[in-house]
Amino acid sequence: MPKVIVVTSGKGGVGKTTTSASFSSGLALRGNKTVVIDFDVGLRNLDLIMGCERRVVYDIINVINGEVSLKQALIKDKHCDNLFVLPASQTRDKDALSLEGVGRIIDELKESFDCIVCDSPAGIEHGAFSAMYYADEALIVTNPEVSSVRDSDRILGILAAKSKRATEGQEPVKEHLLVTRYDPKRVAAGEMLSVDDIQEILRIPLIGVIPESESVLQASNSGTPAIHLEKSDVAEAYRDVVARFMGDDVPMRFTTAEKAGFLKRLFGGR
Amino acid sequence: MSLIDNLLDYLRGDTKKTAIVAKERLQIILAHERAGRNASSPDYLPALQEELLAVIAKYIHVDRDMIKVQLEKHGEYDVLELNIMLPEDKRAGA
Image 1 (spheres, each protein chain N blue to C red):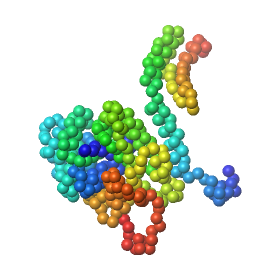
Image 2: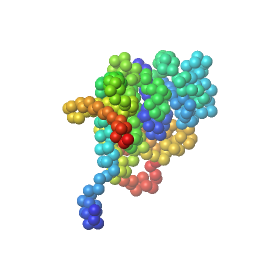
Image 3: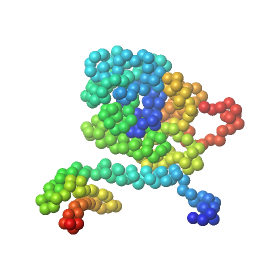
Image 4: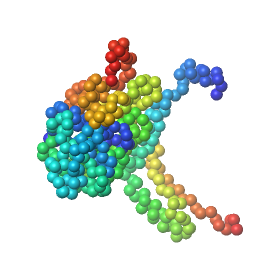
């Protein structure tokens, strides 16, 4: 049964696109035929993070308008043969992203893909709504910071009230909390909300913690999803997230500050 | 607060960590926002406000934004709060 997963947050800049890129790559690495869709019409960026920006010819609006076939618009990922990117339109009006049109695309994708990952734009406007409407599951990307937690709560409210599953009275969208940009040292110093605090406030199950790391910027600089980086906490954290999503029992990591040992300091651990 | 108090606070570790402040603030604001979201009642509030306005306008001249209808939760009770600001009596100043 194919799954539609939305990566959403409400707030901007918390790591939705970074997560969409790494999460979809991770699903593909685990053998799922995966497509990742950029819903940020007008501010397309997933293509840059995936490193396929120069291969974009058609976009989701072209497909919705029937100008090209889905097959023509899908871009094959450079790292995984079973991963495809459907870019957002850079020029069109965001209203062109009709709910009905998105539904048609998702239905067609369900015929040949196992996982359909929807990278939501920030905000609670039309783009974010169309990204979440058809979701079966949701990754709620949250930073340990008050405005991000509040916006996540808002998004959870919308998912519970306005998603297709909610309006049709089906089983609710399965929600997963993903805490990103986490700094255990600052948590230990009482300067940052802890994962437990965030979980207690938002009351949804935790799927993973992505540590704050310099390697995320390096990954985006080079157009490589962070999950492919070697010797990186972030890559390992994302692999854990994918494993848990697939049902593996993986203990949480990167939640407590570890004192850098002599060897780690010597050889580096990033 | 004197220097001694500050020092004692420091030694006792009384200064509230900002993460705790953040958590408390979030719990309060989200409880409030969730209550507003989940309440089934606000549907009728705009209509109620309109009708009240119509009745009041029969007797007194009031502006549209001078009347506020709010539903709040106080523990077990729902409180319907009606706030009408009457215009200042123009004759009073004359």
